[in-house]
Length: 207
Image 1 (cartoon, rainbow, N blue to C red):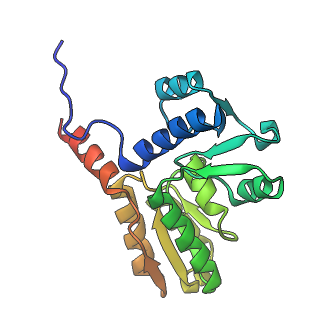
Image 2 (cartoon, rainbow, N blue to C red):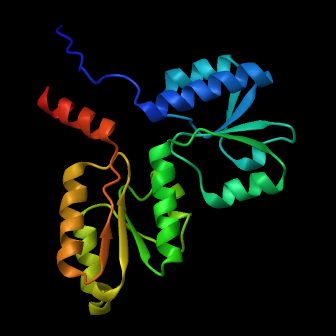
């Protein structure tokens, strides 16, 4: 069997950063808690658990005195607020690219604009980003955009700030955003797809 290894194979910056933070915290604190899978890699999560980084799926399972690692995809704002209110120490391993999107949608709300996120509605990153503003739109592709526009002519007049899930397929983002730019009167567009992700997707398609 022939195995082809892509040049871009391996962790991106955000994932590598998250894993190193988890390793360091587990060693320095004699253990820590990962709230959800810190990355989408079962082998890495298992190795971190061996170092003392136990995984929990709910903030209710975090005990007083625990140090919590926030996963690379980010977390819902309500969860972070809850942990802060309980006095739980958090190490934020959220990818800086994801944090930028959280900031963009929060700024959109402050400016009186509605955030539109192009990505997978039930992905942890998208769910987290959506929590940093009120009533965001989430589109999984151009058909969802067309359906929303067709529901009410007034939708075209809503000031929109459009962002993308960092791992969104570029074609989906480009086709969706083109429709919004063409049909809506006031659109701010931010291409927030991670360059490392796009490079990996392109290289995989070429192979």
